[in-house]
Image (cartoon, rainbow, N blue to C red; front, side, top):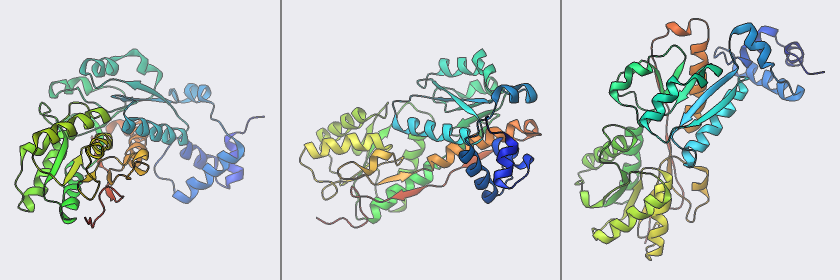
Length: 340
C-alpha cells in the first residue's frame, strides 16, 4: 500500500501536523525538523494525493512558472530549481514560455489555463508600466525581475547594480583599466541590461576611469552568437581593451571564443568575466570567472513566497521585494592577479 502522512510522521518522529506543514511549504518549520520529514518522505517514497488535497483545500496542487525562453541556460537552470523547490512542497510545476513578448505575457496572466494552478511565478520582459492594472489579479502572482513600476505584486530578484559594480571593480582591482562591455540594450528603459550598465559605470567613476562608448557593445539578445557578434564588432572598431564584462555567461562565452580565434590570450591579453554562474561556465576553456547572482535562492524564495500567499492571511500581505545575495566566482578567465 502507498505510504500515508501518518506513516511519514511515525518514521520522522513528528506530528501529523508538522508533516503537513513541511509538505505544504510553511516557512515556520525548523530546518532540522524539515530535514527529518524530507528524509522520511524519501525513505517511504511518499507521494501526496493531489486530487484528495484539491477536494479538501480547494487547491490544485500545481503552480505555473513562465519564463522568456528555455533555450537560454539561465532560465532552464532557474526552472529546474523552481521545479525542485515545488516538489519539496508537494507541488507540481507547469512551465510556460513567453519569448519575452508583451502580448504573450498579458495573455498568459488572463489565460483560463491558470485555473488549473494555485498561482504563477512570472519572469516578465515585455510588460510595461501601463500594464500594472493587468497584474492586479485574484490569484497569487510572484514576479522575478525589477520592481520598477510599483506593480502590486511580490518581487524576488537579484542585485543587478551592486553585482555589476562588484564585477567591474574586481576587474579593475586585478589591474584592468580598459574594460569592454557586451550586452548593453539601447532601447531598454529599465531592466537587467540597463541596471548592469549602471553598476559598470558607477565602478568606473569611483575609480576615476572614463566611460568609453567605443568599448560598449550592444546585444538585443543574450545568446552565444550575440556575444560572438559583439566581440567581432569590438575588434573591428579597434579601440583597445584589456578585459570584457559580459552581461551574462552566454555572451561572455561567445565573446571568449572570438578572442581566442583572433589570437588573443585569455586572461593574459584580455580577462573575461560573465554573469549568472551557469553550470557550463566551470567547464569552458579557460573556465569562466562570473557572478553567481543567487539563482537557486531566487527560485526557492519565489516558491516560498507563493506558498505564503496561499497560506492563511496571505491575501492581506503587502507586496514584498526580496533580494538575493551575490558572489564572485573566481576561475581561470579572470584571476585576481593576471600576469603576462
